[in-house]
Length: 568
Ligand code: NFE
Ligand code: MG
Image (cartoon, rainbow, N blue to C red; front, side, top):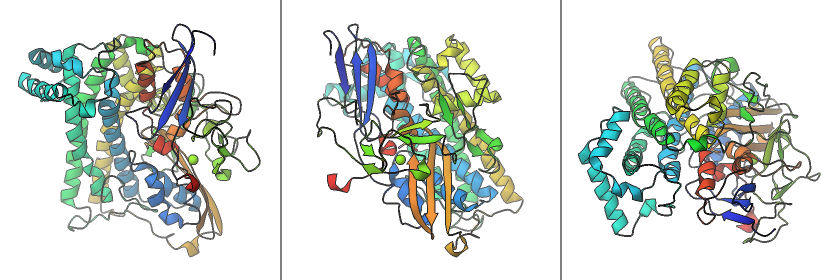
């Protein structure tokens, strides 16, 4: 390392799920020239799925993560259904849409307030706020009811008790007072109040998963449909009372998104417009698509379309085929894995291997071994290219394919903030895209609910097709890909079935795409590319790194799902 340059290490990155280390190399001006993303945890699922009954796979796969608690279950049952040509009834498709939609709304609101907001909101500064002026501010941006001077004075009192007691508790470990915080005290107090409101709200709306899947986290799912039968007159089925509860929850979700989440995002973004010109990185975006109006086998009916955008070119959408061995591949050259025939090539998930071959220096290391292995995350690529997945990819895909609501929301948000369309390709754009897609999905939930009710009224109460339940009816060998859009991006599970048992199982997960290391060609992953160019005001308090990394909503529990029994 030459004089004047530095290496900034953030380990662990907090306010995420799982264990992530970022190393950034800076030049003499404190500008990040190279960044390295390392998943530092190992877990275990792809290996333990081998040999099991495919109908049980979801219950194991779902434990990949406790944050996106539903999605690995859905990807898993879809993989089994794809492998066997198993079609699910219309009601099951609608119930799955509602459950996935609820996962998005819940997850995105919690990410914004509980994991990301304190990169932009200074909790301690909120103590200086005038509660009356805070009420005026809150009422000027929204009709949300909890906006009185007395309410904000009460929140401030509670906060003061924390701070004066030296017990910031859930608010500990912030870079409070850093000059990068720009909100006035009143906006900080408003955001803290909404942080607390979101905690109570999420607890209540999580009940939607319990109605359809028995519990949350980890609601039940089912190969061939959904597990909860519809019988309006039964206490042990989806009945009139439970359907009314779902309607109530959808209403509460939409209300919070419209009255709190969307206005707060726009209000806070207005103070951070310089973050609309940095933090994108790759310019390539991938979606598998999701939320079928009819069937997962008909991508034309998806709310979020499938495709790849390269080099920010929204006029051209590349087709994605999850079965094509030349498209999706995982590389392990800079990961703590090996391949049977040696590294240097990518393996399609059908041929995927999970072989731990860690040969680097023993942790704890002072520095990542960036020339060799430095992460427990693999490096997925689409036709050899690193791509970003997640909310920004989905909003761009919806806009590019003519979704009117998406276009209108983007235009209105950019107009309010007086920002050009290029602002989408940034840390701020990624965070705003998450908010806007939440609005689109929360609204769409009402449509899926209405369609479900219409089906039931017409006499269709089927929720499961069990015609293929008996493995004796399966072919001797089958393979399939289950895909979905998870809150953090495109999620795929690939399954190989032989003699009714799982012969191979591979998951390529959103945070694997975004947080993965360099590939055989040395090209960086999405996090790594996004950090290049950031100027660190104070390397001891690298809030700039946190802002961009958090804008992806990392989940390393999802990204790493292999276990080395000897290391445990
Ligand atoms: Ni653990 Fe997950 C989501 C999946 S990961 S949170 O969303 O799949 O990146
Ligand atoms: Mg995997």
